[in-house]
Length: 171
Length: 384
Image 1 (cartoon, rainbow over the protein chains, first blue to last red):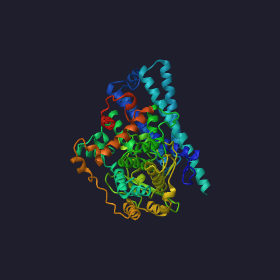
Image 2 (image 1 turned 90 degrees about the horizontal axis):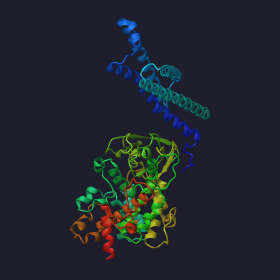
Image 3 (image 1 turned 120 degrees about the vertical axis):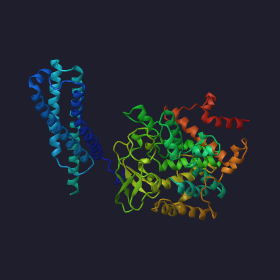
Image 4 (image 1 turned 180 degrees about the horizontal axis):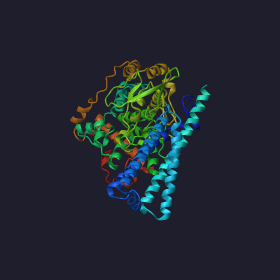
């Protein structure tokens, strides 16, 4: 049975199926991570935790805070939409549906954003600013997000290479 | 497999192996009865529920998915429908839980098949029927395990039928319990995906629908346990091998062959009927009962009555408690308990607790497992 011409069990085909599955599952993961920022913001508001430094909030005043919150919401909405876009595209790609390359560029954006966030959180830990526990939770989440994006990116490249090779061979 | 193979094809195999018409009928009845002997049925005739060889959908829905419930399910399905191929199968880089489940994957020609046939040797015709059911199912149900497990029994959706001309045709699945399969359009009913590892929905070949039960179909798919490798299921070939192996096993049970060896098929006896059998096996139909029945009647020249689950019920009910074990169903119940006890013991002694505890009566004495008390009593009865 193993040598049957109907089965594609060569290492490349197996890797392709594994990577397709990775895209499908982690695509959902990227989408879900988009909501982490919103959950964090709402939790901070609900628990009365300062969103900005207390001194900054005082300096901004009421109007300044409203404007700052407005921009914060805009940035978060953009982040959610971007992650949803990337996650859903990755899922479609994993399912073998036709998807453009653009989402790969946005994954790189997300990774750069995650690296920036990790740098800020590590700096915060080293400076001893912010709540100790919050910093480590934030670091864990950002590292997870970066890991997922990296894995999606590698899987997407590998899947595309395989498809291109198959297309070339069939031509 | 369905009644077409378990009842009518088994009749043909038994007759070819040398059994008389009456013996072949009793044997194939016992074979098919394995799919009907549920706890509900056993309760209805006031027999021990521990002899159950199958579970109805209603019973499965009602089962608890705690350890005890899962062990009960595994004892039934691994013993009679998904006999494990290799209880010591190597599984590098796997947790103990995964190893235990992986080792329950069903397949033909394992040591337990030989143990099953050996167990039936010198026993009742009902024991032979049960052994033939178990043996045949190792071919039909290969690659699935008789224990609820998502990581083993799940499949992906890319099923392709391999048509006789060699082309591939996509198989679609729907999830409508009770709905019929659309064989012509390749739309089959299967179990809905459930993320819970131990859900009843992840028992056996539910995710492949009834594909393993149809003799005509050849298809490829990807099982969850095989690391993204595709798997080919050639049912006509598997069913033919099952038929030839059954003939060989039954000739052994009748004493015509010195020993039962796995990987051995009595193709010489079956050869004159090979074309006819392959024609039946490859005919695109959900139920091949009529064709097998016609072949059986040609072989023996006798009428083969349709299977009726209640045929032997009155005999059992009307017998006194002392005589019950000597009735048709009484002998079936004892044989079922022996098979379940043997398989449970083998799984347990392999270091796998998925089928529960088992104590070897021969070395430990009876230590209180109520499930098999009836077996101990039968042994004592025989000794007296």
